Length: 509
Image (cartoon, rainbow, N blue to C red):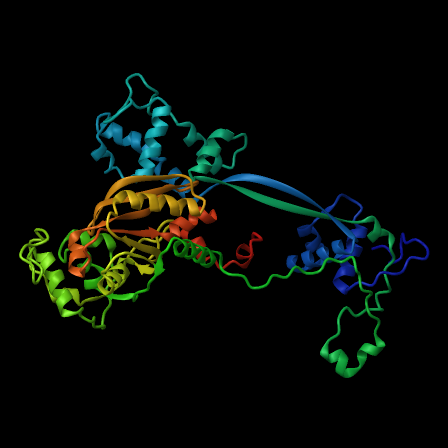
């Protein structure tokens, strides 16, 4: 190591540094070669990397050290990409199914080959562009087309990424990245060297350890009177402090609530622990029909449910059994063809949707006009993934007055999408046990593709009439978490509940 004053100009004031700062600066001065990497410097000094980085940042803030950054980017397989390497790409599996079925696949056959709708759509599009398929349906291998046993360009690139090869086709890798099969991993390496000022200025003697801060011990003992203080460096960067801020998902939900309030809706709430009556029966979901299983409600043990008012229970039972409502001469419809069981109606469940809030609201206030929304938690037995969770937030809404039609509901979906900056929306017919007609609204996510966000429809008479409602009611149950993914630029529902402070502060990792 050079002497503390080596290379110093005459008359320069000696630098007073902390022990680690002094050691690191002397090591940088002693390095006559190119800039040294942090890891190498830490090994040489025997300092933990975190401590070393903090010391180097303080030296840079004092203009005593400089840093050079090198950035590298490499492609890596995502978990979906690893699965595609192991099981085969969707297009390869689609080709294998075609060969198994003699070169022809009907749409029904295509639904049984283990690919979801998004994967099948991507596979068909790619295979047609590659010349493997004839146009139209059923899906047919093109006569004289590309040989099915040759590797697809996407398969070649996936194998190259898995093998960490270079010279990879950028267009194909970019397409695989959009499909979520590969990702670009960026790494930064920082190398340090002493600055001209750090080399020129002398260091104070090592035995003259200066104080950088007062402590209670120094104050009570009076030892601070015998010690020199480190000069205050007005050029040094101050710590960046962040105060408390709302969780981005919670703040976005509040903004969405304000949009609905601005459109004239009032907010309502309901219990999380419901009964089968409010969660299903009053919505005309049959007690013993597979249609009820679409919600996968979670039952609750050792808790007794409270039965609804007797007159309402009688009206709902009549609708289910196809009998006239009490006091009326003709039934609303044929019902479900079986006996209604009040014991089933009283069973407790965790709420699987926010539609019971609408039902309770209508039972209290059946007189139109009304605009109501509820934004709250629900629970279903789901496999947790990027689009699903066992607990989720849903935004329920109803509009009831004379003349309401499905066109008003489509317009409402468009207005809500536009209010949060979403421009791509498509609507298609759907089915729900308690609405007719029913629709689903889809928005495009840059990575997940088209995802269902806006399910809704017009409540059936079997729902409205037992509640005393005589006007058409448009209802929806927005998957607000999925909508937040698009609005906030996220790719996974689990990111909505992130606990990483760096990302929550907006500063990255």
